Image (cartoon, rainbow, N blue to C red; front, side):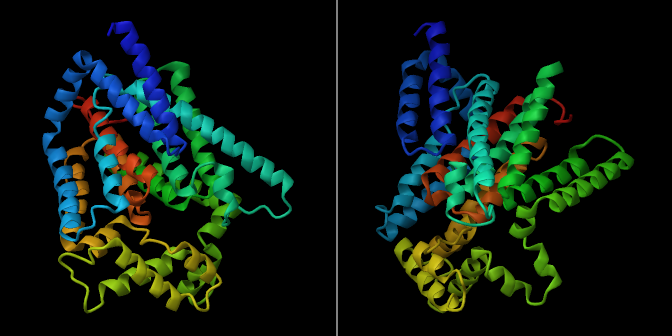
Length: 409
C-alpha cells in the first residue's frame, strides 16, 4: 500500500470507528473489523508501531491478561461462557490494542473532538428546543433525557470529560489561536456537562483539577491557594445558577432530617448498593469465588428490589429495569468473588503505578475509575469499548511524555 493511500485510509477508518464509538452505534463492531483489516493490509507500515507499543507496555497487558483470563476461567468453571459479558470482555481486549499502530495520537484526538463536538451541538440544540417548547423543563430525571442527548447521559458525560482532557493535551502542543480554540472547546464541554447535570463527571473533573493544583502544578503555595479559592468560587457559582445541578445533587435535603430517606426517592443507586451489600452478607455467599452465574445475581437483586421499594415512588421503575449493581467493582466481587475483584482492581493499581508521573494519563485513569464506581461498563457494548479505548489512550499519551518534563500548562 502506498504512503498516500495509507494516510487516507488511516484517517477514513479512524473517523468511521470514532464516529460510531462516540455515538454509541451498535455497528461499531463492523467499523472495528474494517479497522483491523486495514491494519493487516498495511502491515508493513503498522507492525513496527504495534511491536514497539506492546514491547513498551508488555507488563501492563500482562496485568490486563490476568484479569481477563481469570474471568474466562471462572466462566468456564461455572459453564457460563455463553453469557453476553464474555463477548464484551473480548471487545475490551480488542479496543485496547486495535489503535496501537498509530504513530501520531494527535490525529485521533482531533477526530474524536470533531465527532464529540457534533454530538454536543446536536444535543444542545435538542435541549434548547425542549426548553422553549416545554411548559415544565426537566433535565433532572425522566426517559426523555437520553433521547434529547442522543447518548445515555452517564456515557455522554464520560465522553465530554475525556474531551476536556484531550483539549488540555492538545493545548500543550498548540500555539496562538489554536491554543485558544481548544480552551474555548473545553469550556463548551464543561458548560454542556453542567446543562445535562452529569454529577459523577463534574465531581471527577473537580477532583482531577484539585489534584493538578496540589500535586502537578509547578508553583509556590501562594498561587496554589489562589487556585483552590478560584475552584471553590467557581463551584459555588455553578450551583447558584444551575437549578438542574441543585436538584441532581439534592442540596435542599441537607436542611432536612433523614437525608438517606430523601435520597432513596431520587437516587436509585442508594437502594441498588444497599441490596448489593445485603447479598455480600448472606451466609451462602462464597467470598472467594462469588455467585458464579450472572442470572443468579440478577434474580437476587430483583428479589431485594421487590422488598426494599414497597413504599418508594420508584418501585415500578426498579421492577421494570431490574438494575445491575451500578458499580463494576461490586459486581465483580459478587459475581466472581474476591479474586475477580482483586484482578480487576489490580489493573487500576498497576496503571496508577506507571502513570502517576504524568497528569493527563493519570487524570484519564481517575475518570475511568470513578466511572466504574457508578456504572457497570463491562455489561454494555459502549462501556466495553470505552474501557479498552481509555486504557490504550492512557498508555499511548503516557508514552508521548516519556523523557519529558511532567505535564504543565
